[in-house]
Length: 83
Image: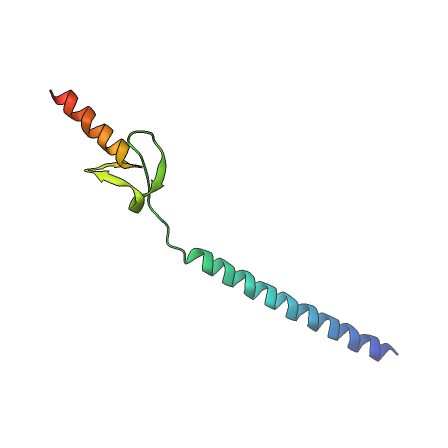
């Protein structure tokens, strides 16, 4: 009777070990998938300080804007300041 209990114990340990290995493998794949995502460079709008990805921003020299309205407002403000 003791040998059957021992075999069952070994079988249970083996099954738990298999579950652990699968769980660990899945977690590692999820971590690798998350780290493979490209990080986007974030810039802030010079007018309203809204942060947005650089590729979505409107650029005027080294200044970034979230929309054309803010870009044009900055250009008109610069023109009136230069007069």
